[in-house]
Structure formats: C-alpha cells, structure tokens
Image (cartoon, rainbow, N blue to C red; front, top):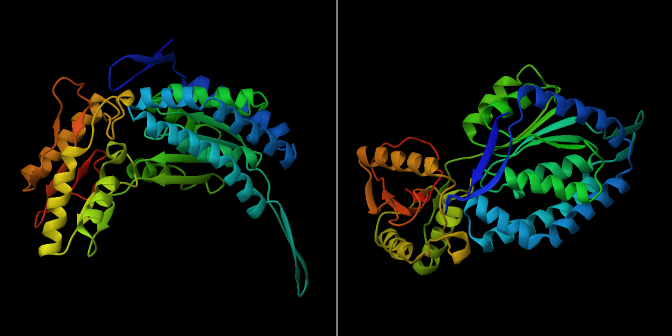
Amino acid sequence: MSVLTSTCPATGDTVWTGPIASGADVDAAVVRARAAFRDWRRTSVAERVAIARAYAAVLKARTADLAKLIARETGKPLWEATQEVGTMVGKVELSIAAQAERAGEKRSTMPFGESVLRHRPHGVMAVLGPYNFPGHLPNGHIVPALLAGNSVVFKPSELTPAVGAAMADAWSEAGLPENVLQVVQGARETGAALVAADIDGLLFTGSATTGAHFRRAFAERPDVILALELGGNNPLIAWDGDVTEVAALIVQSAYITTGQRCSCARRLILPAGAFGDAVVEAVAALIPRLPIGRWDENPYIGPLISDAAAATAHAQVAALEAAGARAIVPFGGIEGRSAAFVTPALLDVTGVTVPDEEIFAPVLQ
C-alpha cells in the first residue's frame, strides 16, 4: 500500500500520514457515492439545510484546532488560517441563500400556457482541492453541491490531505449520511483516476494550464458539469492617490499568503513620472518591514507550500533577470530557515519581454 505524508513547510514536521487511493479505490468511491446519491437526492431541501448548518456549527466549534491544522499544513500565519475557517462557516449560509434564490421550482404564465422551471440534482460531483486555501476553496464547491442534492468525491491537494480529512470528519459529525461525501487521497495519479471515472461534474480550483486540459478532456462530454476556478497573471494599475495608501494596498495585494493567491497582484502598472517613481520607492521601503516567520510566530508572510515550490519560484525569477529584469528588491531565501521560506521581490521589467505566466510566490513585476 502506498502512503501519502504531508509535512509543515516551516519546520519539516510530519502533519498527516495515510494511504494513497489507487485507481480501483477511486472507482469504488465513485460507485459508493452514486449509490448514496439515490437516497440523498430524495431528501428534502430542509433536511439538507439542517445538516449543512450542523456542519457549520461543527466547524465553528473546532475553529482553533482546524485553524492550527491549516496553518501547520500550509505554513500560512495562524491569524490567516483562523480567517479561513471563519470563511468556511460563512459559506454555509451564503450557499443556503443562493440555493433558495436560484433553484427549486419556478412557474410563469406564458401566452401559450405555463412555463415551469425545475432544478434537479445532477449526480456525482468530483471536487479537486488546491493547497493554498485547502479548507475554504473546496468547501465553496462541496457545500452548494451537497445542498443541491448531489453526492461528492473529494480529492484534497496531496500537500494538504489533513485538512481534507478534517472537513470530511466535520460533515460526518454533522449527520451527513454515509458515502454521500467520499474523500480519496493522493497526487496526480489519483486525480487523473477521479477525472476519468464515472462522474457527472468536475469542480476544480487550480492552474489555468490544468483547467485547459480538463476542458479538452471533457469536450465530448457536455453532460458533465465543469466548474473551473483558475489562476491568472493579474495586473494592478495605480494612477493617482496618496502614495503611502497606494503602496500599502499594493503590498497587501501582492504579498499576502506569501503570494499564493490567484487574486494576488502579479504585475504593477504605473505611469511614468514622479507619481510612479514615488510609488515604487514606497513599495520597496515597505517590503523589508513585512514580518516573515513560522505560522505560530505571528508573521505576515510564512513559507511557500514546499521546498519544491520555492525552487520553482527561484528559477522563474532567475529567468526574468536573465531576460533583463532588474531587482529593485531581490528575491531570496532566509538563512536559518527551511528552503520554503523566501523574501518578497519587486522586479522592474520595463521594456523587457516577459512570459505571460503566473509566478505563484511573492514576486511583483
């Protein structure tokens, strides 16, 4: 039996160990989820709402423990992990309201009679979760899917399996019937097996490249719902305002979560002249003031998710500099810390041809 292990990127300590789901295991999970779907779809919306609210109550009661688990497994600061749990709790009522507003049955009179719109559960939803928000982002797929009467097979990121297991445990304590939510742990092979299985929907948060692959893979399967929340290469344009306030906003946007948000600013676009120069100077002055440390040291910036992620970021920055980018604030490691720790960078790429790709790290161009 193959084993999956997750570690804290800040310390290297083992956080979770468990079996990797084989292709046969994934197929069996989908079969169980489909069997459970037959009864789950027949439950009333009120029953599903009650279980979802019970799940939110479990999350709220476990906030401290779950936040610590998220912080240890991702490396993000404890304050940010605590916010993530709060967002997970809040998503339940938002989803209940959306279900009531957008689904159900609606009738309207037409010139030729009556129009009736009915919503029905779709089937088995596969959810592939990311590592940067291992609770919040898959939770945003799972809660609405279950409220609508679907069953779910959830593969957490192989870098954050413990959080996925904790979410499933919370649903179980809330009273979700057995097998309505299945968790399969593993890396790319497990995910590929799930995508290839007899599913009715794929709900994915991750890279644009992977999302494009999924679009092609399901091009001839219009019956399969695809919900793809993908990364980008976000520009932030600053053209006027108080330089101090503008710089603070830029720093927060670019470097929060150690740059590991698909919503982080990656490219800063400024007008030539005094204002633009002053903003660059102010941003460069703020960067060294950002506290960097372990999740329990109250930092603003923790490590990247892994040593490998840091190595990739170092290579990407080196390629930019080789192409002509100038380091205003250089990218680097931190002596005495794990290789996953990096320092935020500010690179001037004026007049340089750079690839239109996202660097998932605290690097602002």
